[in-house]
Length: 153
Image 1 (cartoon, rainbow, N blue to C red):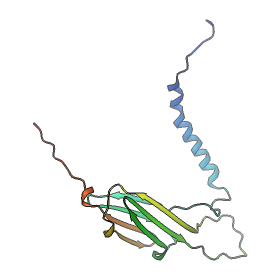
Image 2 (image 1 turned 45 degrees about the vertical axis):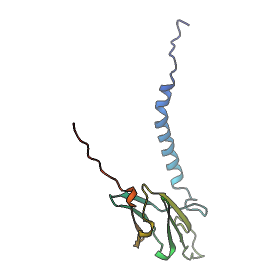
Image 3 (image 1 turned 120 degrees about the horizontal axis):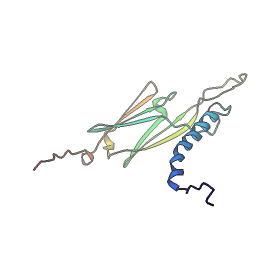
């Protein structure tokens, strides 16, 4: 065994490569499935894109809901969870057309968002314009951030 180069295996060395391998595999599968003909098939679930931001007094939620109308959207707040539900109706298809891709989603969706603070559910304001839903949720007094001054000695 003196002539055979031997290097002891260390578990920490193999763990370093796992994140990069995972990124490469994710990229491979994303590219592979991106242009498949079954994209947009019937059972595929669609969830609207959502941004959640916070100011001193409010939590703001912005959701992209293209193709919907205000009457198609239901919003509820329960504790610290905001739920956005809706249904996008399918447009009438022409029987003579043969689709190569059908990526426009139709059907119902539900998006539940855990809020970063307690809100006053009776004062929530929701506006829908041009396919964008903007929700302003005023924070409750108990959840407002209180700044504490640090004293030097």
